[in-house]
Length: 489
Image (cartoon, rainbow, N blue to C red):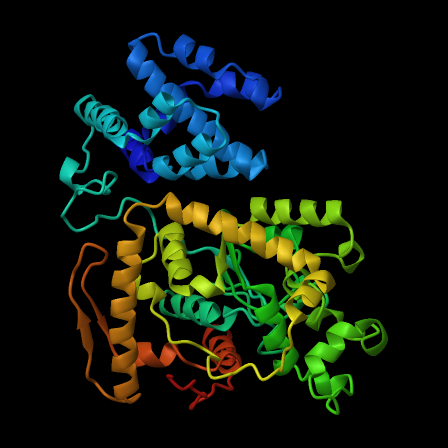
């Protein structure tokens, strides 16, 4: 049974089966040398003597795909984090195109690479042999996860729901809505949450957090974190439960800057309200009007939240190391512009149910009011270069993750439909009504029921929700009977 679970949990593919058998040589030879100098053809043929030449060449192509995939990431530790621990299926056609564009394969080899029929056949044979040769009980073959996309049965869960999540809440990136999802999950599952001792919103921001700022965990460690603070890996590894998944969200930098500039009333703070375009004036003359009085609200804002030292803002090498470190630390960096895709990816990563990620947009009524002029976007890119590198990198890795998922666009479409029904139901129901909404079973989810209480927990003003959770978990005696609820727009 354990072997079967391992295969399905890692979304078994032919490349995994192959490279797993070669892992020792990979570690000893490839990682100890320059990868581009390695003889991959010899590697494949030597390690696969039981395959005929055609099958070996097919595997050679898949190994080349594997090699290019990780070379493009330009971060060796990515192998340790994502391949050994949680291998995802590779988008063969996309990566085959990458190879062809780089002229690393001939046309024949390229066609072999993108011909997934043979690959899927080999993969199916491998899995079937594992089932037939395993004396322990296994799920029926029709219940396995839809690896090839052909199953019409309800998708069965083959993973364990993650209850340990560290969400670093960045500013003006849609993070309120993600925090609300995670808080609701912790509330409904009675989990231990990192709650601030002295406030209801953040933890010492813009200073680094300290343990004395938290209320003592209700269990041995915290299951969930979801507040504004400055990221520090050592600190969070210390306070969070083992094997916590680290996730965060970012946004297109100039749009994030516009939102922050307006929301935090920077024009008022810097006495720029007498100009017709305060944001433009700031960007043109920031050396004289800013004087770094509020660095966390302006320059490389998202990177600052994620732990970038201000001393490294203009150091290209240090900035790149910073981004690489985040790539290693975080299992998922969501993108606000693709919010639904982001929460579905989070659902798959955490093995949550579809109901767990239903959301009501929080703080969505805020509209950017800052007047911009031509050239402002380029000025801001020069002013906050690290945020732009951060966004470019994680936008790229985001879509690599999406391309490796099976039936992803179908699940996103289904989720949007169900979330729209959820929003419509919550608009119509009052907090004390007993009416419910039943979502029938589908390929993507079992049947579940939504009531007015679930709607309320999806739209509570975040400081009020934190206050309520402190009262519930620590019996502070000052519960809020009528919390503020965000409007559904």
